[in-house]
Length: 338
Image (cartoon, rainbow, N blue to C red; front, side, top):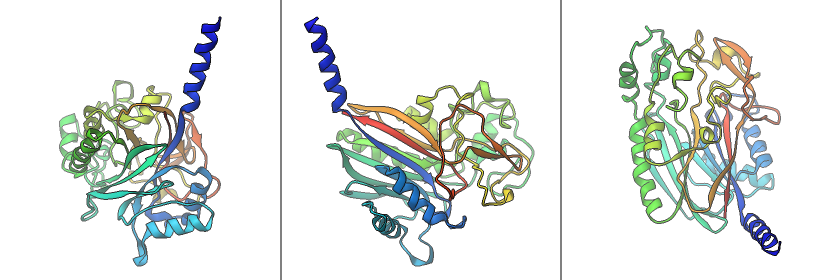
């Protein structure tokens, strides 16, 4: 009896030592400028959620302003202290002081970007990366009968090889190779590594036999390049790990319905079902790091064949306060660390 009590106390003590932190991946659609009140909504949601780290997509520094400085000041005015640094196309926010930063894959001609920051969380050194990958040669549109660079209607490809040939003409795989090379250095040094981003590419874990005749996949099972590269390198897809059933938890992040925006501005392929999970948070296994929760951040609605539809899946949604500032849904992930 005494040993059982001691074991219980030891277990409870171990759990008490575990602390949590959160990572938010969020494509903010041109800094929220596409939606009336969008920028203010971004600020309000961050104040509400208080994520430890935010990986932004579509940072544009409009009108010669630095988005990183502007968002940090807006959050300070709202009573929240965050840290950032200059970036373009993708961006990072941290509730914890940033000790280093690096451009891993610089933006050129709108072919995507990756940045890295180094900080610490609960006594652990962490490298957080943000990725907004090349939006051209988006072959998952080709599968649906639209050219993935011009979005004009085309014949549907008949083989996986055709699709991957288009897909790999993008710079998405080049960017992820640069990330993996840099992240290996962090891992070798014993640093925790987390990657958030809008990849503009679906996952090989989602385009499987069970979904080949759904969502206009048109019978194809596709090993999408970038998520597969990360999988092969040992990185873990947080959402699909927590929710392996792709039918009950598809986790679609694009295109999100936005009631303030006309449907024709929310869809790239108006005649198809283009729903996909293209926004991710990945991490590399680390001692004492546990994956605790992941939710889709945003409205339940999506766009399907130019119609607004409400998702009836088992995905967990964290609904917006009021104005939704973007055409994507975000992903909010909770980690535990001892």
